[in-house]
Image (tube, rainbow, N blue to C red; front, side):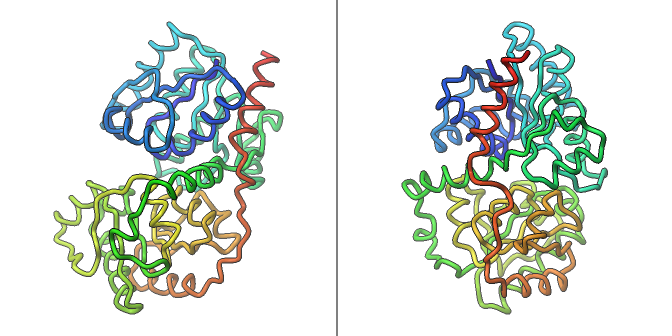
Length: 360
């Protein structure tokens, strides 16, 4: 039996193809939801929206400091696995859920597979970088999305026999969920937006949101961009970001702040935007797959493949640099090749897991 561990909405999105692959293959699995970002009750709608089965286990750990949150998740997972021992645990990405799930399973001597292994920003000030490094060095099966991420793992001395280049499950998720989105969403029509007629912005990282200079630089840059091109800015604003905008007294009159969108609604906005400006790693990938030019509001990225193919550029948080880089990306013909695989990563990962379980 495979235990699929997740705790944030991006993890649900990227683990959905694995859940569907298990269903297709008749593989026994369970879903453990830690509730790292939201309570399970809030995420219940998200599972239903993506047409996924409800989790068998819910920890509802909620928010908290990194150590507190990680400790709560480890304690909860350990209690579950002591009673109901899986044959293999799958974690995805770089969250506190990944760190806690990896450590709890390893101490119980349960094999671990790390989905989206080998990503590196080379900035250890980011807690996500620490989480992904620990998970990679503890896991038994490393599912690298690209050859570059495989090389990063080899550079760190990880046994090549543990590493499998599978592509990224976000490609599967985009393909699978676009079909669902077309049936269920009509946000563009409701907001009177034209395809390629607006900029889409997401900001959530602490280093951008909690520093007034950084947040002001981003808002000033995208406001100027909007005026220069005569296009609206659509900004699904995270509650924490909205709180800091208000606390810092930053003027957002030229920006359309909207409530956070569900994944299907966000995909509709994303796939029709003229340009995406974001500090999210997952959004960088999605924009690349959807052939929408992207500007990353950070000084580094663990998704260098998007830059290498010409789908993305780093701009940081300086207003003038945001405008300069955005103007370059606005001229893109969007003809880059998708570096993240053929959309069958979920199936490949589950097949590898099945073969590995036979050898245990």
